Image (cartoon, helix red, strand yellow):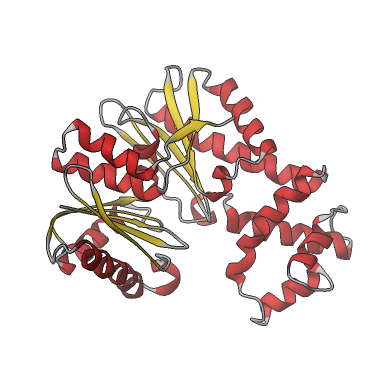
Length: 325
């Protein structure tokens, strides 16, 4: 019996499955945000969803294996800490904890190696070579050189909108679009409302779709931000490929997360074109299956499941991967 956990920024998904790939129960809980809400709260959030899943499956209290892949657990030392915390909860006899980018990679590749880039609320990348070597990034924000993701794009949209209004920056339709999204008179009022706590800063991620909509209408400032996001995705992927000696060989590059899964035409086209220049043999894929599938597949790997178990599990989730365009 396997407990699979996908801890995302906005929600936590849990599944109880057999080593034969049969899913007995799934549940959803709150977001896994140890940085913003504290480690104890984050683990308690997972525990609430786990308790409901075990009850629904008629399983437990101790299963054979826990396979947990988590956002905001970006460093090996953090993986070790949550491995300890999850082990202490006593959910499984063995416990495996990793960053959720590795689950995306497992869900999206036909082999067990390749490169994955996730761009949701934040951005991250991980790669695994055929010989098991790993390439990864700290990915804890601007302090480690990161740029992009839904929240950051929202910040950039607001920044440009305010500067367009007060004259410090070029005109952009983002100014009116940002104000309209929050029902404010101006983008400047949105900034002040965030400052005074009237609008949660966490809602800036809502502006990512607004940005892409304005870009689709041809706004130069918005289009520039979309192009920069594409460059960052390709930069992460190609650096990982280079570190793993995969830049010039056939390899799958898997994309996932809300920003990329939305398949915005300008973003996808820019990513494809740039990646084709730098890694011409790379095959670009979008994962359509939920991230929980990757955690469950890694759970099957850890328990030595038979081949038919993987087919049964993928059939349960119904979605897989598709070409980026």
